[in-house]
Image (cartoon, rainbow, N blue to C red; front, side, top):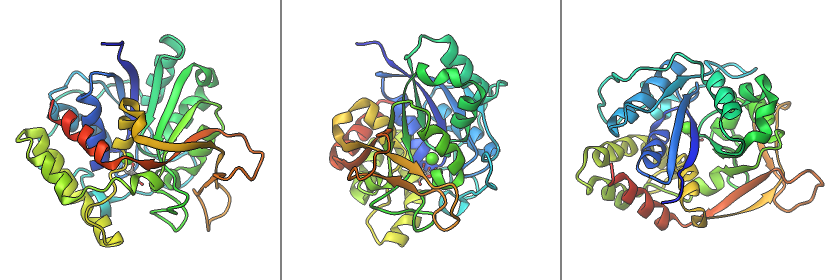
Length: 313
Ligand code: RIB
Ligand code: CA
C-alpha cells in the first residue's frame, strides 16, 4: 500500500459534503489530517457540528474538526437551508456529536499544518465557500508554494449557475475568497456544475447505498433522499447532482474525469454576474491557465466507487 495522500477537507456540511467525507473515510488511500468547517450551506455552528456527526457515523471520533470562518471576507452571509434543511443535514436522524470540536481556529490549523509538514505533502479539498483558504493565504502567503494541490468543488460555466443564472453557490457566497485562491499560483483542480450535474443520484444509485444494509449506507441514502428533492423539482431529473464527492473521487480515481487546463477568473465587481467563474475554455485570452477544469465524468464508475467505499464503513 503506497503512502496515503494527506488531505485537509474544508467543508460546509451539507448532505453532499457528508457523503464526500464518508467517501474519504472509507478510502485508505487518503489520510484526513483534519477537517476544517466553514459557514456556507448553514451557519458555522451547524457545519462544524455536522462534520462531527458524520465522523461519528463513520466510527471515526478521532478525526480532528476545526471551526473556521463564520462569514465571507466581504459579502454578507448567504445560506441554503431551503436545500439542506434547517440543520444542514436533514434526512437521517443522527445523534448529537460527543467527539470534541478543536479549540484551534481552522485558519491557524491550515497555516500551521502546511508550514510544519513536509512541503508539497498536503492537499486541500474545499467543498464549500473558500473563505478559510483565502484567510490562510492572506495570513501566511508562504503556504502557497508548499501546498501540493487544491481540488475544489465550485463554479460552473457551460451549465451556468445554481444560485444566480451565472454563479454557483460556493463561489457566489464568497467570490473575493475565490478570487484570492485562483490568483494563488497553487495547482488547482475544479469540479464545477458542468461535471457535477452529470453525477445524478438516481433512484437505482441511491438504492445501491440502501442495499449495503449498513448504518452508513442507510444514512447516506436518507441524506440523498432529502438533498435531491430540491434539484429534482428544479431540473425535472431523476435524482440531483452529487457535487462534493466528485472532489474525493478525483483523488482516488482521476481517470473517472476529463477536463482541460484553462484560465478561471471570478467576477467580484458586477452585481449582475457576481461570483461567476469565467472559464476561458477555448483559450481566447492570454490569461494564465491557472486551473484544470473538469467537464466530464464516468458517472457509473463514480457511483460504483462510492458504493464500494461506503460499504467499507
Ligand atoms: O453548489 C453546490 C455546492 O454548494 C456544494 O458544495 C454544496 O454542498 C454547497 O456547498
Ligand atoms: Ca459543500
